[in-house]
Amino acid sequence: MICGVEIAAEIVALVVAVLAVTALARRLDWSAPLCLIVVGVAASFVPGIPDYQLDPEVVLVGLLPPLLYSTAIQTSLVDFRRLRGPIAVLSVGLVLFTTAGVGLVAWAVIPGLPLAAGFALGAIVAPPDAVAATAVARRVAMPRKMVRLLEGESLFNDAAALVALRTSIAAMAGAISLWQVGLDFVWAAVGGAVAGVVVGYVASFVRIRLLQEPVADTALSFAVPFVAYLLGEVVHGSGVLAVVIAGLLLGHKSPRVLSGSARTASRHNWQTVQYLLENAVFLLIGLQLRRILTEVGRSGLSEGMLVLICAAVLAATIVTRLLWLIGVAAEKRITAAMGLKRRKAWPWRYSVVIGWAGMRGVVTLAAAFVLPPETPERVVLVLAAFVVVAGTLLVQGTTLPMLVRRMGLPGPDPAQDALQEAALLHDMVRAALARLDEITTPEDPPEVVERLRDRLQGRTDAAWEQLGRQSALVETPSDAYRRLRLDLLNVEREHCLKARDNGMADDVVLRRVLERLDIEESMLDRDEEEPPQDDRELSAPASMANACKHLAHDWRDVEPSSEDSCAACVEEGLTWVHLRMCLKCGNVACCDSSVGKHADKHFRDTRHPVMRSYEPGESWRWCFVDRQLG
Image 1 (cartoon, rainbow, N blue to C red):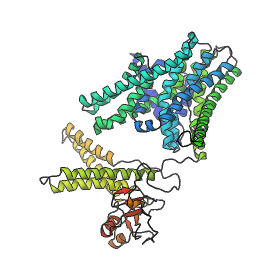
Image 2: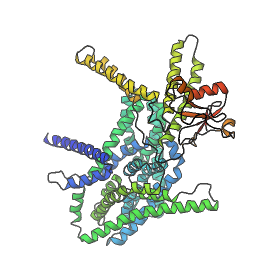
Image 3: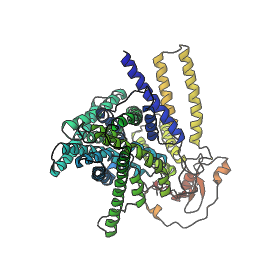
Image 4: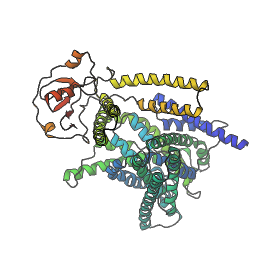
């Protein structure tokens, strides 16, 4: 019983430490993984702290599958297909290059180390950790394409690195041919991919036919990564790859096979699991240092030699990644210049930033502990792996934000996102309104049909209201509705709680009512967007920009009827939200997100087809006739 209490106390202490350190790191804008490792290292030397030993099987079988799955289900399969070439270059080519480069350096600096053991260390330090890199990337507003590339790399490089490690360990035990190495990689990829596809489609079938409630579906989703991993390993493929493939498929299919409540529950549950697991692992990594140093002290190597070995391995790990990325950029530029391939050259600054975003994490240290006990200089290799994890987080993790800013990489623009969201919602609402006209019958109450139309139109208007540099200065109608409705929801909730405390209603009824209030409140909540990073002109997103004869027309320059106001709103005593200018006559009026909707009224009165945004820094256009953004 005492043992059980101690285990429970240790788990609670671990969770509390994770919550405290991550909250402090977020407040101070520091790297949470690095802070957790530092706290873990410091705690490992405190008397009375248990001597935690990171079991590699627990990490590789118990922690890695759910961590990879939680990332995979949130990764766009469409984006992955689009970036599959660069992802393969990083997750396979770079892993093999790092394995060879670091392996040769380790073989050269560690006395008596077999070359196969050096390659094993190279495979151990080859895969970067996406958690650390993307956490920094989002904090400094790195371009989304680069973030997706780092996430895609992290999903697949673990599989390549673990196969390379398994091959290196086999080579230490005896001779192994190059043919066998290639066959191992091919079979690991094929077996893992097939296992992932099978598990993904079976889980989708079960979700559609058998599971109809969020709780049961979430329970199934918790089993999927482990089933995929085990099936991949049973067929002697890559269990890690099987988990990733299954997660990508299920994440892509979930909007069609799951209800909204099931998707919401699954998303929240997996975000919680991911948060606890990935942060707890970094804390556990730091707690390993005391044990590692104790074992290294019996290796017989001098402190100076150990420092040289660790520094050489760390430098080789960083340099090989940079060399590979610079080589990729050079190859793309050469082939593009020679016209051999129809693709854009890879910008040098992209290569530098992605090359520097190579922080290592949990897989590196767990893989180091997988080395067999009879491995020559095993404790030195484990120490070198630990130094690579801590060193890359310290050196690269703390300097990556500065490098991104110095390179001048454009981050995501919230205004551009808002324009794309508004255009997408507009098209969705048009389709819904067309369907409403089809299914409406004379027996349907007119007030219900009108209520549906107002609700659809209100959602679109709220999206358009997010545009404009003046939105922070003027409260939009949707903002006013949100403010007032949240206040009313608080009053309703308080009344419901008073009824609960006074025993006026059954608890089941009260919970049902509170759940409805919570759902409505969650629909009103929205994250505050950061302001744009620069003064870029806001134009229609390339993926959604359309063309029609009206948008393509060469409109002559006209003088705006007003410099900073909607004359119709001024006359009627209304407050406008966004200004639009007719490209044919120059009339300046408010858009549909305003109460007056005078730009739309101007079109109905004059049939002038195209308007443009008259907000500062916005150049996109809108065709009233074809209802297209251009």
